[in-house]
Length: 103
Image (cartoon, rainbow, N blue to C red; front, side):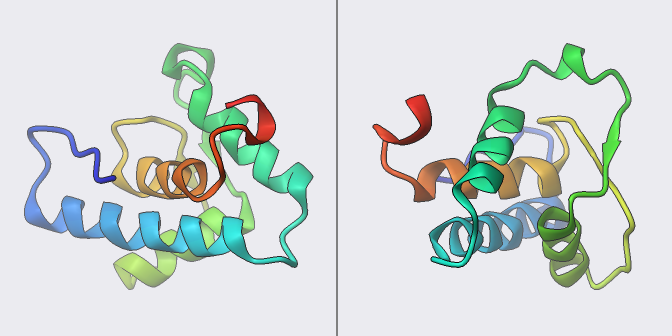
C-alpha cells in the first residue's frame, strides 16, 4: 500500500512506487535468503533517530533506487522520509505475510 509523505513531488512518489515494487519482488524471490529479508524488515521497523544521517549501501536497495531513478547511486539515506528507502522497505514488509518474522 502506498505510503507517501504529503509534501512529496510526483517524481518522489514515482520513485517510491518503483522501489516498492522492487522490494516486493525481491522479498518474494525464492532465492532471497530469509535472513536478508529479516534485515530489511528490521530497518523498516527502526526509528529514524537510531540512524542519524546514516546511508546504506545494501545492494538490493541501491540497485532498486538506481533502476528506479536512472541515476547511479552508491548508497541510500536510511530515513523513512526518503522515497527510495521507504518504498523498498514498505514493499518488502508488505510482500511477506503478517505472521512472518514477528510482524
